[in-house]
Structures are given as structure tokens and as C-alpha cells.
Image (spheres, rainbow, N blue to C red):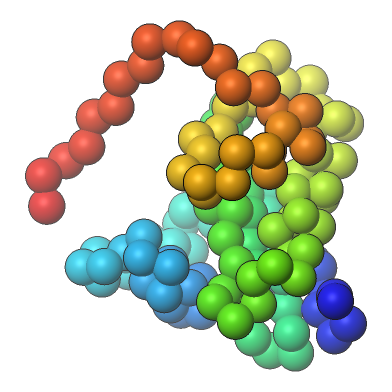
Length: 137
């Protein structure tokens, strides 16, 4: 199922393609993300994993934060490539990175609707009060 898909850790990611992928999956419906901002975002990430089919970005995930606390973000797969194991392989790379790190806390926000996807990678659901602040756009 992963024939022809190459996974690249901490490699060059085309900001335009990544922004297109964000828009395609519905995370940037207003087109707020600029290529320059996305390049800056990538430089601040501690780890990235990109899945490529030739020159096409088909999957992505990243880890960002500080030296102690990080968050797994943007585990995404292009429509038409889902259910092939791309997100699973991206998460395998993420977990490999996490295991060789010295992070004290690793979190992620799960909006997948797939109840057990992240549990397969030893992420546990926690029941703690949390808050979110979002700017009004």
C-alpha cells in the first residue's frame, strides 16, 4: 500500500504544497496561511516527517514546543491517499523521534474521530480540564 511513497525526516518541505494540503483537509478554509509564515513555522519545528509520492506531498506530521514540553501536530494525509498507512508511518517516525528525546511532556489534540488511532502509539486519553484561546478571524 505504500509503494511509491517516500518518507523524509526533517527534509525540505514545500510551503505552498503544505498550505495546499492544509486547505484541502479543511484546516485553512480562509486561506490565512502564507507561504512565508509556513516556512517560519517549519523552521521552529523540532521534527518533521513528510510523505512524498514523487514531487507531491501526500502526508505530513511535526513536533514543536520547547526543550521540555512538545506537541505532536498536523498529522495529515491528502485525500485520495487515506487508508493506505501514510499517517501510521508518519506517527511511527514521530514516536521514534520522541523515544530518543528528553522531553518531559508530549501532548496532541485528537480530532480524527478514529478512537484508537493514537492509542496504538501509546498516547492515552486524559481527563483534565483544558482551555483553548482562538483569535477571531
